[in-house]
Image (cartoon, one colour):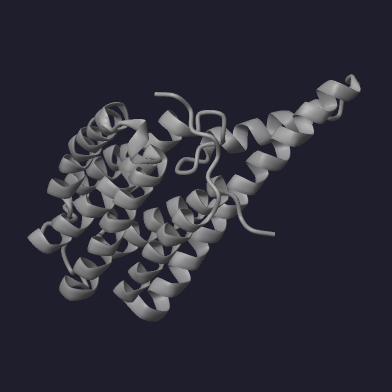
Length: 225
């Protein structure tokens, strides 16, 4: 069975966040608000990467804003906006892989090489986050699993009490969908950690492959902007 777009995006989210964190001295490239925590730690402990962590949120916000404008301004007759955004994300992932392999490994998160590579990855994952909100609002999030995990536990608890067949079917369907997203994210995280340990920055070759796969599968019906 072919993986769905949300599953592939969840694998990508987990993989890129983990690989970026390991290679770029603790920079979260997908779950960017996590950089508030690591920024505080860097300031207190004197570790590197302060500038990258400061730039992460403005970069993320700028790209999300631009992505939304693109989804509104590109005429539908020019093709799928969703496919266009996935293509832009793929190009950024390719650029990030080339930067990481050419400029890495990164001994300091404060160097220009690490910052440029990190911002490129953040831009790619900002597009993925925007895609979820704009075109896949009914799907589970693919970059942050806290909400998904919370809902999984709630649904498991709800299945223990008597429900109508219709309500039970709805809960089970949501549970399957969210569990698949959490499992895919975990696979992405663990695979990135393993490949980074074995091959270092060469692990960044995988995200472009995942990005290409998202272009080759059937996409869900787009949500109107």
